[in-house]
Image (cartoon, rainbow, N blue to C red; front, top):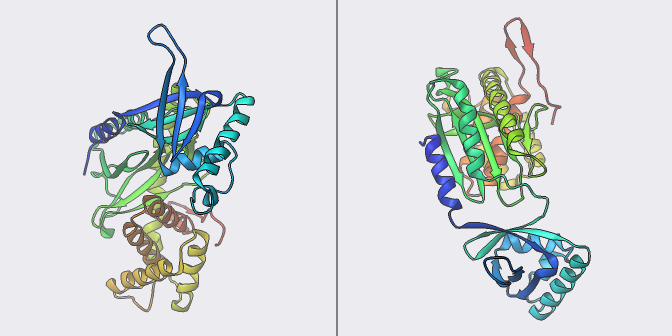
Length: 352
């Protein structure tokens, strides 16, 4: 359990040895062995300098993509593409890029490049993002704000929750909040969306990922003022979505699923989200297990399917895959209609 100040510190600590270099293709050379060199022009303080960075796997793949290189599985394999040929191909492609006056943003950590991005990439790093999220959460007043399951590196993910607010204590404590994510290496936008969290078993649901109201901050052409306003609005909408998710979660216990229909339902969602057969098997087992805990092993409910998915997400080592499963759980909830006052909050997704 952490605070927003802790999350700020994590982001700041990670950024200590991170640096950015804007480099023209004409000043770059591929040295082989995943090393890129580049020249910086002379200025008032020093003369022209030659620098080099190692490329991690992700940055190597990005460089190959930026310059229009061949299939990565071929060029990255010394058995298929000998090192001399790899070096020749990269440098010829860089020469062509130089003719087109291409420039890149090299994002480094220590002496290793972690990303090779286009020159129009807008730098909006985790520290900036968390600071804006913290300011946006000020709007909830004196209510305690806590951070659950933070992950900070080239990618940031976390649930930002209001643990003193509980939507329904009968279900292990459903706490409202938002789910945030950002990438500093060009493989994802900054997002703030609804987050529902059951503290009793630390499982979360990412809700409203693809909603019309979702705020997606792509790293292009934004200025800080625009981003601040959008993050603040996204937090307000995310908290509203978390309440909607809680209502649907409670209602999902009343949605009966014929036992013979349970596995086909799971298989359809598994196919949509690219889950392998063994992972789908595991999800089905967790769903039946959850139903058994409530004494309804022969009468599974939609709540069991959702809980099974959130338990499944916790077992994944790959955080991107875990996030996708929690998004899937949220989308399943979006299919549950629920009574709200005098009207029904209908399903807002098509049948899978």
